[in-house]
Length: 120
Image (tube, rainbow, N blue to C red):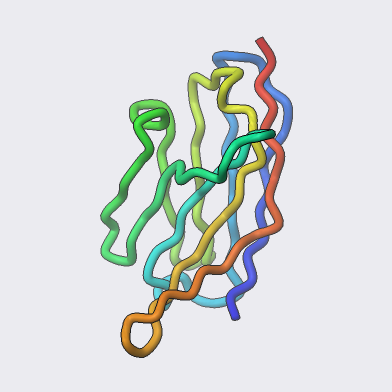
């Protein structure tokens, strides 16, 4: 069981920046992938950015060029740097960790979520 603790959300004006942090209860080197999802009111949860253990990353089209996912293995922490924020980025952001077990069974773990509000 991986426990994830997020921090860094808040209220920011459009065009501003925020950095989200997610610290895992175990070494992130042992985790296959970590990422950030978000869920706005009335909408489905969607992937924002993810980083695989190899270091490969993928981003939602809406995040490309504005958001950057990174990690600090020594701190067991993954970050999401969000720049040029827009009101439509307003959502609860969730940290996600993925581990694959036997027969490639996927296990997803979630943080409690952190609110990001971008004012116009």
